[in-house]
Length: 193
Length: 261
Image 1: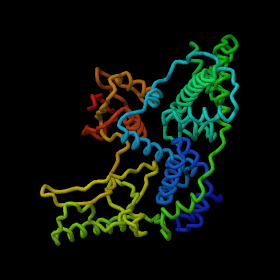
Image 2: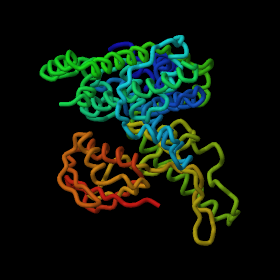
Image 3: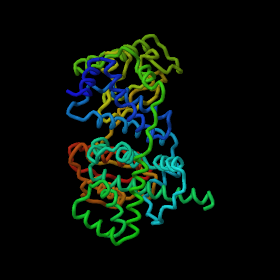
Image 4: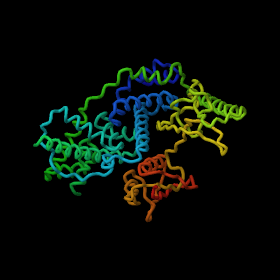
């Protein structure tokens, strides 16, 4: 039995120290997943805590044949989606940005403008572009390109067919590429290039 | 195949997820097409930028806040028997609480809770049984259970009978359904652009088998609970989903598009 399995077993038996260690194993990943999904530190902290509370309360129903990381990510994903739905419901309407995300834009085929930006600004832009993606695309980009999960692991986490993972990754990346390209063009225009 | 198709393959090619034949076809195309070569390079650049994003530091005091939210000294209960015992205890407490309120004739219209504040778990997780949750460790775990999807929701409401007497109180866990149960569902959409064609694309995208369609509905084959869950998940993105069929054993689901209010 590996350390993680031992920690899970001890946590189920009520050992809070073991659960604390389990939290420390995953807090960075789960917090970062929630952060990228919400693009807001306060919401991310709140959601990540909600995830661990759900994990704690449902550890007894965790099936040891499943991978714990897949299970906890699925809880994190569903918690973030729940949160998104509640927020959307509260706002009653989509923001124009989200509305735009719903439509896959046809690539304009213009090459990326010559990149003169300092990397910090460029990374801020890419963060903004990720934040603007619709939740399904955002989660797939985070899991694949930030957290390096395999296609099959992503299918397990999101509980969707492998074919959907493939098409969503392709679409999300193409959308991200085109959004970034147009933002970079806008950035250059503002700088009078 | 045109450049748009190759654009779809580029991402899979980068991850080495293409079949050998498609891979060769794409490589040949890239040799000839400057535009796709640029797209290929740009996609690689974007992936590498995303991949190099620095992780955000976990906020200071995260763990302490978490454990303070959870309360201390809780015990996890894995035994199904204890869960049932706790659930029964919870139901009995609710029953006697309501009875006590009715017996003492309390009809305060502003009262929002029957059970004392704090007894109902702040972040109770809904179960299909609708059993309420309590802070006491045994009952807490018995009544609060997250299914492995982690979905949860809480509905705040005050239920009253016709005479305005409070029947039951706030923060009642709502039993959310996250899959299609029957063989007919309606989806109430705001967007007039959503047609059976839209549903067909969603079905194809999710590898669901399309059986038929008419001017405002489509029929899909469902072979597993997972299919039902996917259909629910996808439809809920379009609008309010109402499960209206009566047959729970049919392996087909009719999805009807209705205009939302």
